[in-house]
Length: 398
Image 1 (cartoon, one colour):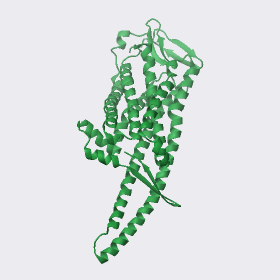
Image 2 (image 1 turned 45 degrees about the vertical axis):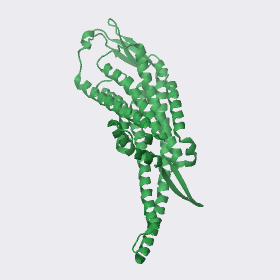
Image 3 (image 1 turned 180 degrees about the vertical axis):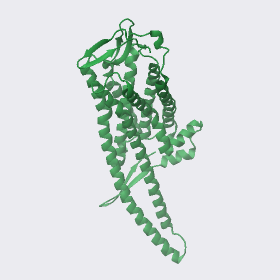
């Protein structure tokens, strides 16, 4: 064991007490590792780093390289991938290095910078997800306004604003995260929250929980609830239209078959319209399912660690963890970081356009001209019957 119980110093911070047995053999601390704990954690971080770098880079590359991928939603998803890349590049290598030391030896600047970049990435990700939900809300529920709001130029402006706001909103962590000196005879440092300033520490954890978890979850829940309700209404009306078209087509076909045994042009058009309705319905549902899945996984992956931080700040969970509590805290942090590599997998499984673009990029191929032409025409329409007649809802889903 590397810990030597030569002296025990009790510090009391308000109602908190924590023990610091920090007289240890310095050289031994750099050569003693508990691989049964380290190996699974390092493997998860390694997989996250590999998949995150590859997948998120592919998203950014294909979105800006291939014309068919350039829609307002996909541009926002590329910004989300950039935020994940920021977290992966800045934070994961430091986290892995920290696993192999009981102290913090990277300096006060890096102590603050790593946690600041983590907050910036997380805030940017959740603001981007919120912006996507609002953009989809306007595209589906208010299609006339969407012509002016849901454009690529507007999406780029939102991205710039989102990143600027994220860098500002992430500033409080610079005042909470400190490099704390520990030890009596052998001086060392920990990179931790400022336990001496309990009020500031609690404020930061509540602030992050509201900003990253509660408020965005409420907004996105309302947005996607309205979207699902509207899609359901449109699909119901569309099913009525297709059933009527199908009946009229069958009736027309039956009558003409009795006379000439040939399909008329009107019946062919009706059958084509029915197939188009079904294809469009499938595309709309696919995009909604994909976006909702991304949001749900973000909440599931980041919620536990944010709630854990709040409970720790308010003394409901101990600062220094042992046993199952230690494994629980480690799992929560791994889940949060693993979220950075999961989105490209979702896009690959649930979006045909992303899947095809990934294949083109990995094979170093140019986009086929036929695909460009097809993508420029790929527009999904919501047909809705009103009391005065019919109204067409159009929204680009690429």
